[in-house]
Length: 266
Image (tube, rainbow, N blue to C red; front, side, top):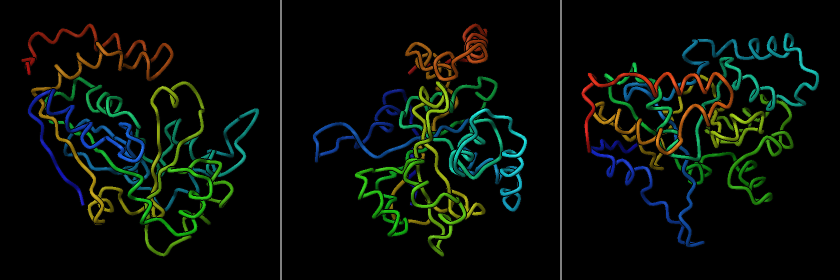
C-alpha cells in the first residue's frame, strides 16, 4: 500500500521526509526507512534491467561482464559481481536507495533541465518488509542481529544468486547494503533493493502489500529553492561523486543562470 503526499513548501517537505522517525524502543530518531529520488513524479520504480527490457538476458549480461572485466582481484561471489555491475552501469535488477532523505532529494533535483516537471521521493520501511521475506532469510538476519541484509549474509546463505531467488515461489523484495566499492558508495549512504523475480516491478509489489510506503510529490515551482538549499548544505555531486566528474557537474549547475526560471520562494 502506497501513500501519496504532495507538499507545498520546504517545511512540509521536511516534515514528510522525517515523519515518524522516532524509534520508541531506543528513544532515538532512527527508523528503518530508505529513500529514492525520482526526477519526475511520473517515473516508476523500475530497474535498469526492466527499462532495458532485458529481464530474460540478465544472466548473459552478468556472465559477459564477468568474462570481459579485467580485474586484478575479481569479486568472489555473484553478489559482489552484481553490486559491481550495478555500480558501473550494467542493467541489473538492483535499485539504488539511500538511508539519507536529503541524498534522495538530491537525486530528484540534480538535473535542472528537468525542472519543468514535478519530482518525487519514495520512502520505504525495510524493517516492516521483512515480514514478506522467506522464513530462512528472516531467521538468518535474526541470528546475525542485522536489520538489513549484507553481501556477507547473502554469500553465506547462497553463493549463487539464483538459489536465493528460488527460496520462495512468491516474488519478494530484499534490501542489502552494498560493499564499500569506492567513496561514491560510502558518501551516498547507499542501499540496494532487488526483487526475487526480475519481471516484477518494485512499485507494483509495494502497492500490493499492506505495509505502507510513501511517495512524496514535489511541485516543480519549488525545485530551484530546494536545489539551492541542498547545495548550501553541501549535498552536491562534489561530495556524492568524488572526483573531477562530480566536481564539474556541481559547478555546471551552480553557475547556471536561473534568473529567468521563475524561482519560487517558500
